[in-house]
Image (cartoon, rainbow, N blue to C red):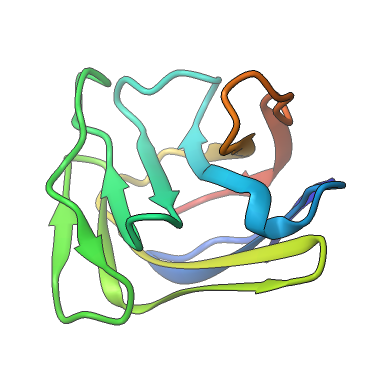
Length: 140
């Protein structure tokens, strides 16, 4: 199960709260993703990944071919592509039982309406993952 709050709305800046659930416990999650784009594509997107084992957030580049330098949760650092800026300040991750919550602080630089997609993968690469789930829409 995955969800995001808010799951609809508009605005140039927002902290989104993405919730992921794993039947083996949230500590089993290897990477969680939040994607803002018209479809499931890393290119020309605001595509954020968080790796709990490294405690770092990443933003995909404009071409969807590589990651930014990692930034620590709660840090003063930020990374940008032409769609958005991801800030460490205001971003956080917490785990409780089977549920993990990723808060991402974003500022959008585009005004195109977009879909919000979530994805979670387990740390064990042979295990299942959530697949991409459309969780809402946003108009920056």
